[in-house]
Image (cartoon, rainbow, N blue to C red):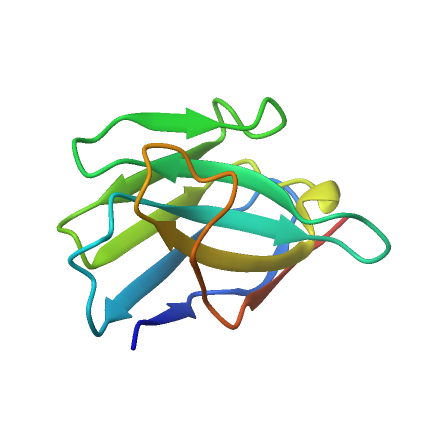
Length: 118
């Protein structure tokens, strides 16, 4: 059984920074891509950033240049969020899957709240 556990969310003022972490446990041999989704109140869940096992990255246009995804091994991934805006407020979910893209993840974390005040 695979588990993804997020940490690092919180409250920050606009222009500030936060770093999210995701640790995976269990049978993760099938992991290729890990990444982050977010869901704001009343909105659909959207893909924020993803990173493959080889280090290839993908970002949503709304965060490119402000957020940086990284991965230190096949189990851990991080999302450095700089220049945060109130519209970045959402629950952020770690996700993972066996494919080179993360449009339909096999695994999800429980989510961590990020709130950006204006």
